[in-house]
Length: 419
Image (cartoon, rainbow, N blue to C red):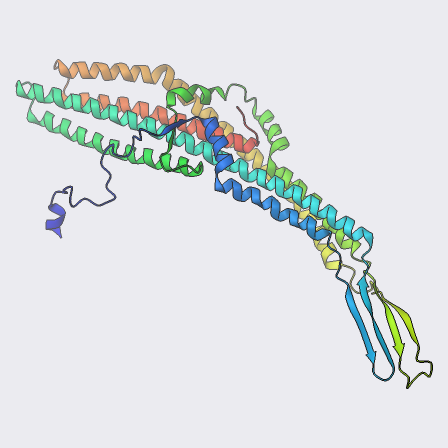
């Protein structure tokens, strides 16, 4: 086993999952997708949204069922050698039952429509999150490649200086190690680009790697401009209370529960059953051998069953929904405040990076490269300076990702687009 592990990995022995660097990251035929196009396409074409919209048709069947009347029956009463009765049996429902059932079914349709809207809204957040993650991943790959180029340049300088006798071979080894580490990071970044692009295309119901997001430079201004007119925390919380679908669904559930309570109360008075038909007397019992009509009625008395359990359950459900509304308001307030603070934190970091950290880091990187080239610094200082420059730029991209995720969470918390 030790001997096997010690063997170098060749092209023939590499696992199938091992991707070559840059083999999958560039699809020449991939189409650029804007954020608005991704949102529209996802909501229109995704099978997830289609499955959600199909729920409305299922709920509408309740309205069809609400119009259904009880089946008529056949009444047969054969008293052999006495009388024979044959007729129809019908249950006559009070008209308010149908009215209450139809009202409850319509209220349920409205509730389902709100639940579908909530599903679509959550899906919109998933698409936006996947889009931004793909944008940042692609930009991170570019950054890793720049680090690889820088380290390769440092390695070339180290080799030249070693050849001329200015530095020991240790400098070359350190530069080679830095290049290897940069190659590893590039490879991982390539895989992340493929992963995020795949997830985005799956959400949009596209072919794998059929489309890719626009570059970061083309969407950064749009992403950051959203924070300009957000308003205060109190304003955002107030907007959330007006627009969050969770609150509207709870309110509609209360309406549906009230409608079901009316249905239960309407069912207290039983529906009467009427039998009507013809009756014939046997000759044995009547010399007249009469044939006549008959009419019967059967009406249950609402003494024991007065829909007590259903009515009590509806009342308790109403109480629970009132508490649920207060609970949702508390949750929404916490979500808005948390997303607002995360957005505030990300914006503060982005501003510092753009105005101060990035320019200083770039100057240090240029100076370190020049200093090592002319022999003023050692290899360690040059490598650290270049790595720190890439680290600062990576942290800037992480701040952009954190900002966009916070903005997405804030939109989800408020319940409406904030663009």
